[in-house]
Structures are given as C-alpha cells and as structure tokens.
Image (tube, rainbow, N blue to C red; front, side, top):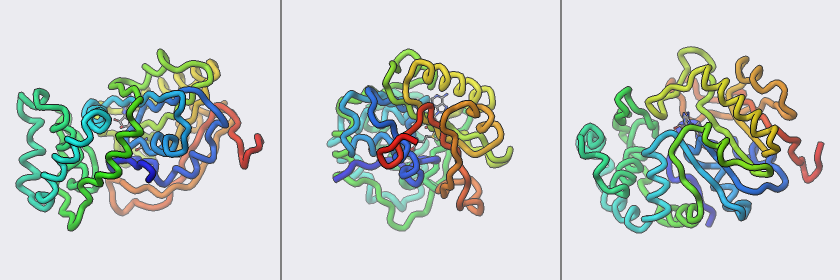
Length: 288
Ligand SMILES: C[S@@+](CC[C@H](N)C(=O)[O-])C[C@H]1O[C@@H](n2cnc3c(N)ncnc32)[C@H](O)[C@@H]1O
C-alpha cells in the first residue's frame, strides 16, 4: 500500500503530482524539501523507491514538523489518540475546546504526540481543512461541519511512519537548505505562492508572511544551488514576478492545475502554474 499525505494542506501538490513526477531528475543523491507542507512529492518518491540516499524535510511551522516527528516516532500512540478523538468529530464545542489549547501557557509542555493528535484532528474537522494561524500564532480556522470526516487511516499512518523512519526532520527557514544540500542532491521548493492578486493572498500557514522580498531571497537560494549542481525544481503561481525571477533557468513552463483550497470558494478551478527546473528533465527516458 503506498503512503499518502496524512494532512490536508493548502497548496497540497496531489493534483500537480503527475506534472512534477514527469520532470524528476533521472538520478539524484539526497532529497530536500524545505517547504514540506503535506509532503505529496516526498511520499511519491518514497513509494517509488527513490529515497535510498536519504531525505531532509523541513518547514517553518514547528507544529507541522512535530506532527511528522510524532508519525515517525510514536505512530501507534498517535493512532490510538486519534481513534479516541474520532467519535467527537461533530461536537462543535469540543472542537473549540481543543482548538483553544494553544491559548494556554502550558501548551508546549504537553507531550508532542498529544499536540500532533490535536493538529491532525483539527485539520480533519476545521473549515476547508485550512490550517490558519492568527498573528499570535494561534490556530484560528473555524469548525467545519463535516458529515463523515476521515480522522485517521491507521494503515496509511503506519505506512507514512515507515516512509519517515530515516528522514531528517527540521524546523526552520528554507535558507538552511544551503548548509545541507550538496552536488547531485535534489531540492524541491513549493513555497507559498506569489498571490495572483493582492486579495487572493493566502500566506497564513505560519504567522509570518511570505512577501516579495522572500520570493526574491528564494530565487537567490535556487540559483546558488543550481550553481552547486544540485537538481532544483520549484513550483509557483504563473505570475509576472515568478516568471521574471526564474526567467534564466533551463526549464520554465506553465501548466494547468486545479486548485483545491482557496480562501474564496468561488475561485476554485483551473489556474496556470509555473514549474521551474535547473536541469533538463528526461521526457519518456529521453533528454530534450
Ligand atoms: C505551499 S505549502 C507547501 C505544500 C506542500 N509541498 C504539499 O505538497 O502539501 C508552503 C509551506 O511553506 C512553509 N513556509 C512558509 N514560510 C517559510 C519559510 N520562510 N521557510 C520554510 N518554510 C516556510 C509553510 O509553513 C507551508 O507549510
């Protein structure tokens, strides 16, 4: 059974996966994903036996990385906690009670596995599966009114745990990849996208925004890694800024993707996205 993402994540790459996988480098050493989110590409690579040389997954969001650590290190305990929580999925008061844990001073003293179970439960029961923090870093997505949400799929959790066993999980800024990635490694960047319009912006994954200066800093990191002869791939929105920042890269393509989560429900549908590679990917086994 293949491992799949265990969190619903805004910008999750499920639908874009065929486009990404058709552009993978033929071979690579270690894999790095510095904006891991739901980790769709990581799980795909693991399912296909492509992570023999190891992987480093990281993200700015400490709660997210702790969730991955709990899945890696305490999967049976985590499954048991989620099975206990499952019957409460339609209890709105309970939702707000556990959502409120992070307003209490002892939140970080709670065991990691309990905090991870809370995050997964909220992710499965909140409105749109949207992980959103306010400016104090508190989870503030509202209750979702689901009829039959999948709170936990124990088999998938165990498979995800197997996938993560030898993975290095780090909390931190994407720039830290510069200290880790070596020639021949593969780095996939899936940053918060450049907004299509000022109001379409959804960059509240952490309580830090991801503005133009961050996009420019990321493009500089991309170039440094490319010069180091890492294989670097990036997805972003098909916007003027993103196109300009990566204009000099060998592969620079727009593809159509259907977006699953958008703050404005009416704007779901097909949008153009940008994929950039620092190398010429193989197409049907042939280099173009
Ligand atoms: C678009 S999501 C990634 C989606 C993911 N690849 C997937 O398939 O589900 C972007 C991620 O970037 C993280 N992030 C935001 N700013 C960051 C930064 N400066 N450094 C590292 N991660 C950051 C967010 O916490 C979020 O998880």
